[in-house]
Length: 89
Image 1: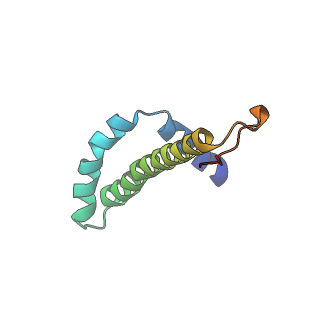
Image 2: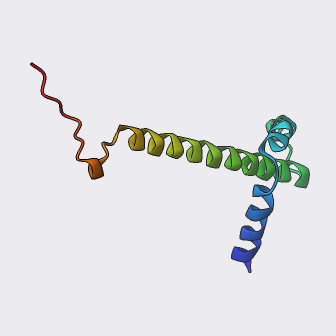
């Protein structure tokens, strides 16, 4: 049950627009920094890290995409018999 709840929550969060989420980040950060052990404070901490989780996920995806594109660009096309080494005289 917990696994399903967490996965449903993740799916719901991922369906939201990252820019809209980022706009709320400062709101939750202010509440979180003003420590007051209340349910509102606890929810703000969780919301802050959920939003940051989306940002981290997107940064990882962009980094992996750039790395794969760079590797694809740098790799020789083996099907045409091309090599990266050239004879220079």
